[in-house]
Length: 297
Length: 245
Image 1 (cartoon, each protein chain N blue to C red):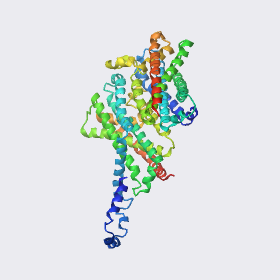
Image 2: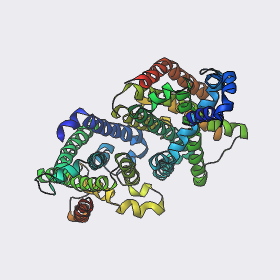
Image 3: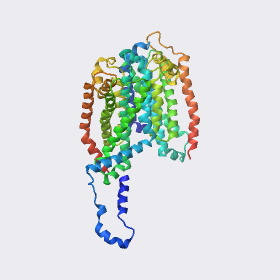
Image 4: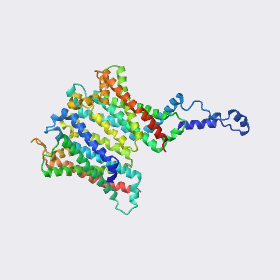
């Protein structure tokens, strides 16, 4: 929206107050205001437009209590209940606090359920016509989609930060260096982005919200069958391979290694491979779907 | 009201959620808490909890429905029609009872698959079903009220999810109360979800003699809770209905 406003400003700046003195000026400047200094799809416009649209999404979220409670309060309550529920049982089996698994677990769940809100937002903007309106404005073609992803990354980082604080209160500590702690924060962002890409793609191709809301069930399923909920050897033999190799378990193991100590490289590679694989599969349908959603009707 | 719920995936989601909770709790927690339940199997211990969760999910969709109705203004339209004031409400509750029945069926099927059996008499089994549906009716009315009061489907669902989460996880449904930290045990033992779970558990019975008896002291509190919810909610419903011009 601010882009439209800027164009208006440049239009009115070219208008001089005195009509008589204007003709010469007008001859010189004829049509100058129509010339774009930067081509619509130039890289420079991409950065500016993405930033403007990202800020727009943030403002929207900040004013919506449902979003705020879902992405900030929910994970904290979930962490507290799971902590109360499982702390004694799990620490009895593993010998260390269950928080080293449950804090990453809830961070991942928070990242996943948050992307559902984001995707529902896209659907609302599609049916409200905002996407097609942005499509006819001189905005970089990729900015709409990129701003969604940037906003999602920031959202995941903030959610993870809040969950981390709650975990710290309950007794979670970083036992490795500063570098590892920063890397710990980045793990949910890596996989959360990949999950966002999936959910947004799904949202762009489905007509009603049920399909998107059903990913909630997927998130819960992934939560139950991950190494962050209960240690791997507590699952029945036949399901252990699934639990061990699903992406969230990889991410949790990497985060466990980065905070408590233990293997980091292998689970980290697993997380990155899963995420990159998901993004590669979804990239083209995502771009096409966004174009279709923006040009419909 | 029933027809769209088959088409828009509501019933499918309900069934999927029941199956997911059964699998999620049973498979992942069987080994870690199973031996501490004092019952013949973890399935016997867990299934009442699955029933309660499934029914509370259908209460959430009741809230969603009534919020959508209120938001889209169909309630106002009903008011202009020659029907009793409570007809839309009772029809919504009837539709919700249909969903509760399906939820009960699906969750009992899930329970049967993992090894849950009714060990009590026929009367016990009938009262199991009756109590579960009674509970469903109370929760549906509560959900319907919240939906009608907020008129916002999205925030209603969130509003209902938090208490559901807390009451569900911190109950005797998943693990016995003495496995929780000391300070939270009184809450775990006495909160309504636990009362319902233990009442249903008593009615389902068990093969071992140490199983809880189906006495009034086991079932009474849950019935009082449901009755209490209903008696509080119905006047509030009338209040909310009057509020609207």
